[in-house]
Image 1 (cartoon, protein in one colour):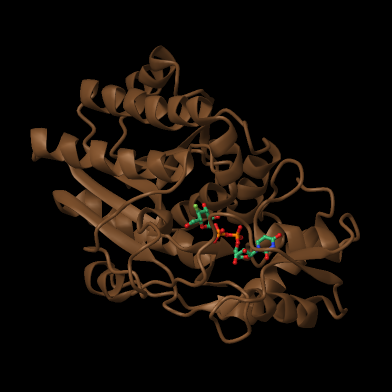
Image 2 (cartoon, rainbow, N blue to C red; image 1 turned 90 degrees about the vertical axis):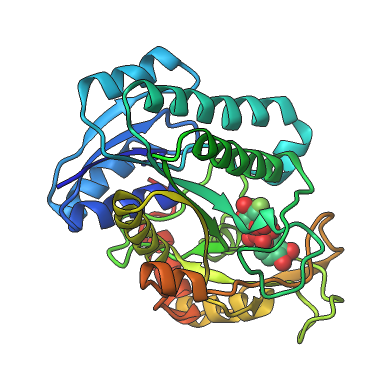
Length: 336
Ligand code: UFG
């Protein structure tokens, strides 16, 4: 079976993708510097799958360390998750974000070029659709960004397109994620952010386990059915399956494809909150706050391309996603 290098494999989406890859019989090598993840995630991956993986504690900024991975292993394809992802922090510390995300990716590509590995699946984001496109978002729409985090995704997409233009032997899959939530049904792995969460689900989870007092709902005066922001929430296991499909695709085809990974359905902040309340069996306190600067009212994916290209579509419902998030946080209230 092919050998896949997973950068950021100990993170939220990375760890679930490692499980999917191992269960499908792939051999995997994880490279992670644990900047926003914990070594325990790797033990949990092994417990869930009963399989082993090879691990390098590597920072992608160190070219020699990245090259060492390629020198010691024959790698057929790379799934590149590693990167910083907090929008607000990226505005406060743009150089940190550009350096880590973009330079890290350049080092990875350099190592791939040196060792003749030309297949990559990249963790992009729906954020590249920018603020002005109509919904649903379709892959051939013009892209843009509004903050440094979003620009790193946009620039890396461009860099990978340029790499392909310079060498048509490359195969690049740019996966544009919508809002990943949920956790592995075992409750062994899930989202485990450092500090106070920025994103909706981890925040709700902290309220549910009593670590935060109440959810702040960022605006209830949007032009949406209940006035709160609408997003396309997707179960992280569906997302992991999408990566499996993308890897199979890049192993067989050359070229560059941007592909949305979403459900095609929008849910509001209140939809998510009420679904979570059903899962945990209690009402959760919230307070409506002003809109968060930079937030869009509503967006969701058009999902036809993933279905046509990969034969993939999301399967889990919102209630299953929140039930699995609750299962994880109630079993791991202090994280991993
Ligand atoms: N929200 C709240 N309260 C919170 C957190 C979020 O009401 O405490 C609301 C937001 O206003 C938004 C929705 O919940 O309407 C989802 O917010 P998230 O922060 O969970 O997710 P975003 O859609 O803002 O962010 C996601 C990804 C980013 C990406 C961004 C833009 O997490 O990586 O989409 O596409 F950049």
